[in-house]
Image 1 (cartoon, one colour):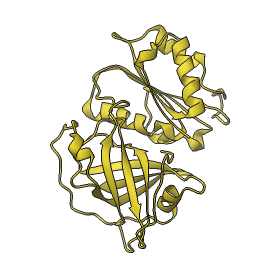
Image 2 (cartoon, rainbow, N blue to C red):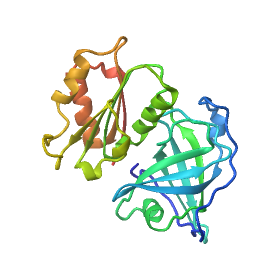
Image 3 (tube, rainbow, N blue to C red):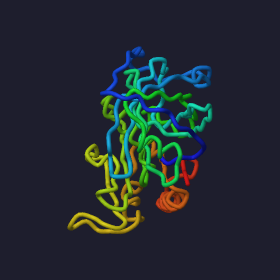
Length: 264
């Protein structure tokens, strides 16, 4: 997800892919204590996957990771050889699967010291520090119908929710509206299923309309909500979050059941 604070330069380790030992958590455990979230832990980069030309997913082994809820984020810290440090908040893209691994999906932000290092210098075997998970406001434990609305890298915490929904075989309703400039900028394009509607603002496949997220996308979902109604999760830039939230309210979504995470 887009950077929101400050970070470093770590000297990358040479050599082939690195696979460190991990401690497996109890399957299904996603409740985390405040004490665990307050401790810095070593995280070893094990894999890099490119999602789009400007976005990549970075997978880390964190042996002491206690678990997280879909939608939570963490603090990441880099430390340079001269002792300089920089840190950022990033949303977790991975579900709470108890594997001892977590994933972050990062934009390559122009001039970003942390995202720039990850996209140009980082290699498997490099170590960073993480602290979390943080914030329960945007978390979705999978116990209520979820209407997810995201744009660009704002889809990152929402993908954690989708992956959790699939991994657990949950039957609670879940829908995603995701906005991107075009198919080439659609993060996680290969993972979307029937729960997802993609909206393209500049370029679209033949036969697919081009335009912003609109009432036409939102209204049908609010016209026939599931039992108990939707819990709406909106994530994206400030402008997108405001636009999407207004559409939801206009379509009948209660204001107190809209959770917003924004950046930029």
